[in-house]
Length: 63
Image (cartoon, rainbow, N blue to C red):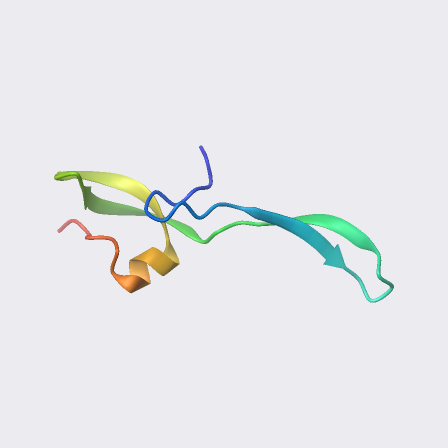
């Protein structure tokens, strides 16, 4: 399953970890995704949503 937020489309980003000696190793930073039961298109279903979308109220949680 993809590590992508179903609301905003946030996905993993890549870059380098840089040590004090300036050694570089590849790194991946994943979004903080949570499975939430939410109303989407009138149906209640479990979707993967980042915490930023949950906090900002972009997700209508199911009761």
